[in-house]
Image (cartoon, rainbow over all chains, first blue to last red):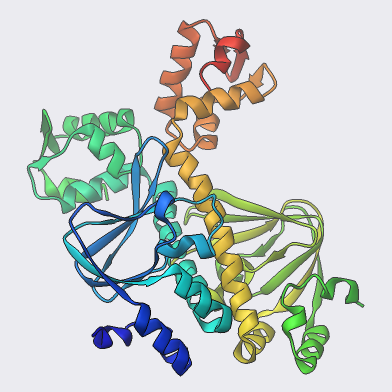
Amino acid sequence: MFNEYLTHIPFYEELTQPQKDLLAQNLAEQKLSAGQIVSSDSTSCKGFVLVMEGQLSVSMISQDGREAELFTLTKKEMCIFSASCLFLPSTFHVQITALTDSRILVIPSPIIAKLRENNIHVELFAYKTMTARFANVMAATEEILFVPVEKRLAKYLAAAQSPIKITQEELARKLGTAREVISRLLSSLRREGIIKTQRGEIRVLDAKKLELKM
Amino acid sequence: MFNEYLTHIPFYEELTQPQKDLLAQNLAEQKLSAGQIVSSDSTSCKGFVLVMEGQLSVSMISQDGREAELFTLTKKEMCIFSASCLFLPSTFHVQITALTDSRILVIPSPIIAKLRENNIHVELFAYKTMTARFANVMAATEEILFVPVEKRLAKYLAAAQSPIKITQEELARKLGTAREVISRLLSSLRREGIIKTQRGEIRVLDAKKLELKM
């Protein structure tokens, strides 16, 4: 019944016939509501997740529940971090959440463990995919570390629909900086007549001048 | 001549005899002075590097030359990021630098490419090692994102030798935050009588109270 999706499993063609059968017999379908947690520290052994419909978010979660999104996954994409118990040291914590109502296909962790034991391609797939995802996340981190926040703020304001309904606190979180920094930068843009601010709202007055800040 | 080091190559036992010979014939030794760049964007195809003596630093580098260290490597450890051309998308930039005078053994990239083509264990080793390194780096990033800078500052001040010779700018860089934030936090610690500051210097006056901030 999931035949059309089996071909989207990247290592499917590398499996032996018995392994293909094992996989097909153990696939589980699951419906998710928007906001539902698919996998977290306490349930991080779910397995590989293939998105059939909808969108998932993969994020880091702090002990007090704060969240930083790493990337999102859409239809036909596969999430391996939901089987991180098998491949990652325990020092790194991810949570996977449904962003919209979604339908997923799960290859349970015990099945992956079995396939992996007898098929190095499954193992290679997992590590290769994790490397690619991490490299993307690190490239984004590189931007936070190295692109001056002035430029990132200008880019953000230029790309958004004016008037922009956002607080300084939210803006700071989105740009990975402190509220004080945002406050200083907005004051400076205001003094130059580039923006106008009022409680929870920013209006771009001079898009041309703003562009020069990017 | 490098026989004692061959066994430190993690995938050595997985190689066929002809592959072992190919490897042994193409290993190159290199001496590095402290500060010397081993591999960067322009030379990122060097190959795998095994540290024989000394210490290497792996860092991200911005276009204008700023640097964020990801991790360091010491004796008998192998660096795979120096062959990132073979395994990573070009979006992620690392530089490898000798921290001290060092001696390294290099498996040149064309040899790795050849081994990888015929031996999936070499490929698996590379991706597996990268996944582990990235996971460690992400765990460190998690701390920057999630442990309040107040706590990280208190920890830093408590661990350092008082008086601490450091500018607010340097402190901000070390703790991955903005100078304004450091300035506000130091003022607050000063008001509480926990520290005393003067140009480029911080003195801890009340170590007990400082500990409560950690």
